[in-house]
Length: 340
Image 1 (cartoon, rainbow, N blue to C red):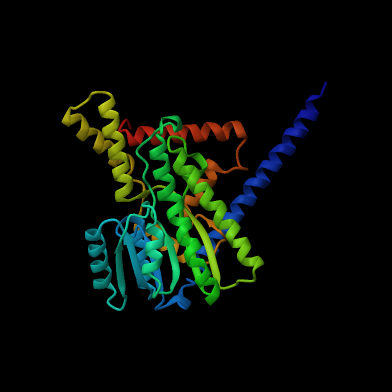
Image 2: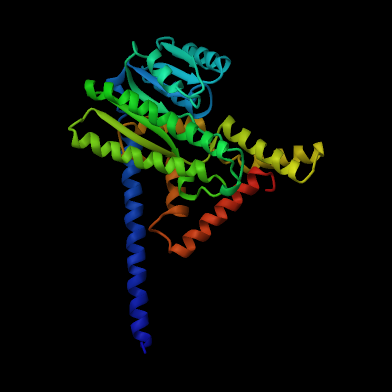
């Protein structure tokens, strides 16, 4: 039998180790924050070069495009809606007349669409790729309720559309020893319950960027950076549409067609999401982070803090960590469906 003093000693050691782990993580976060937020923006060498931004007509994509234009880059914006692209291009050129802006309407989930896009850019050397197109989540849904078609669509939109462009543009960047790739990822890769195909694709994206980063180093390529940038909740039209779709589906399942109830649920969703960060704030942090922080980075400091406090892989015991992830998943489902 262990004596009380032995247990006290062991608990003291465990407490010291836990405290040291938390302190180490806090110091790492502080170092990353200083590097990302206080260091210089590394985009001067891309001034007047072309940046390709997918999903560039609204939300995070449009906000990043504006931030790149402010840094002196020219833009190729890609989205499905030519009308939205025209509006985004007009907005950017009004504020930054020196920026050249091309728009290409394309559905990057369609077979061969990425190859067609690359062919249309054969005369335009792309130095910066912002692979931002994504989403496609139909609402909180258990994995076994996804149809094969819905899962394939999520994979094409959030994965293959990125991978094809990265594979197509990297050779030119490597040949010029000049380029930056940003694949927009999501914190949902850590807790993607009710959106498993989406979360899984973002996890793959993170792993792929880390491996390409290693391969570039092994090949002696020093002028090209590749990064997955992990974002938390951002207030964008796509997220609002996701919540509306989820609430509509929940109401239909409950046979609830009361307009007043629907309006009240919509108000609850907007209130619950009122603390989400604006796309412009997140985009400013993303542009600061290009080429800094490693191949997988959470650019906005509040998202990074949330990620470590709630989902830190080494911070909490496994049982507590699973409980936190389940609580976050339930909250996500309730907010989307207008229950909170």
